Image 1: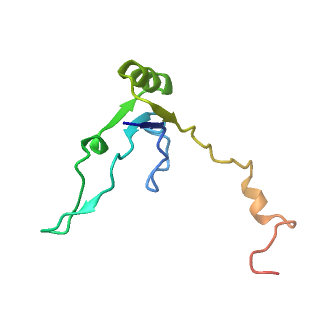
Image 2: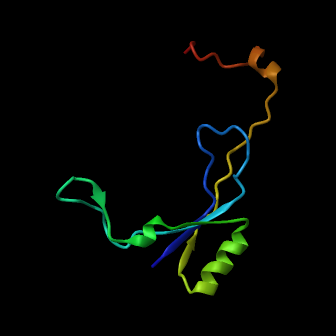
Length: 101
């Protein structure tokens, strides 16, 4: 039973920062999924794979894992690089043209 604590990335449909500060504790699968012989659906007998716990902060998630005796791996979030650019830079004479080589 091993858990991963991480802050999920925004989905492609999000432009704001709502729900991007929450942390998730998710168990890693202990056994591989396999196709069920009758219907062909993918199944697993590992019930912990369905558990996903949400926390307000990283410290709360770590405290919960330690209190329950769950070994965990902390995955630090990668912040996107922000470039300070003004609208006028789009029309600058020094701008590299995508169509010219």
